[in-house]
Length: 109
Length: 116
Image 1 (spheres, each protein chain N blue to C red):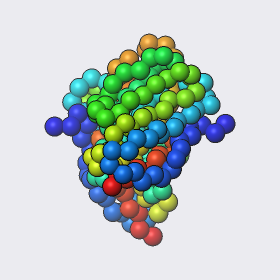
Image 2: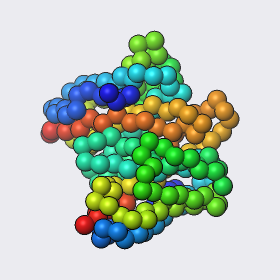
Image 3: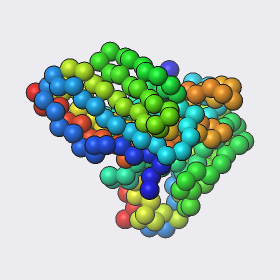
């Protein structure tokens, strides 16, 4: 069993819909990361959080430490949001990441 | 700033050949990492380094070696390429900060490696 579980694996939405991607982890964390992998393959960090909630534009990330659960929300989704969204937990001496398997999001116009 | 630079972007190797994947960062980050991404699977940590001269194994280190002689560079060496090493390899770096800090990781664009 992977230490980091994401759901759903695939998600198709219509433009404008509110999107939620979930992430559960089984062991303690230093922080929970949300990353975006573009269709071309590049990976960028969206959020890093250890408690509460963070917002950047139309993206919101929340974490519940007691329940070991995090969510990534996208409001008013747009086709340019189509990408793979990855959650990862950081731990260890170098805050190295353990990744979920990713959620492929496709937003249709 | 270029960020994290990986070379080459693509490479095809024959079984048994060796090669070095290069990674350089210009952000003065002390933490650096190598990950591999197989199709349909999450990224997995191969090796990491907390500073020049210090490296450690990650989840999947077999078949690889690393060195960290400078803060900027963190090359990954494949000595005897095997088909199971066909993957996309990502190098990343982050600022280490204090023992209690967390910092985002900055990723290179990846190296797509095929072993035939």
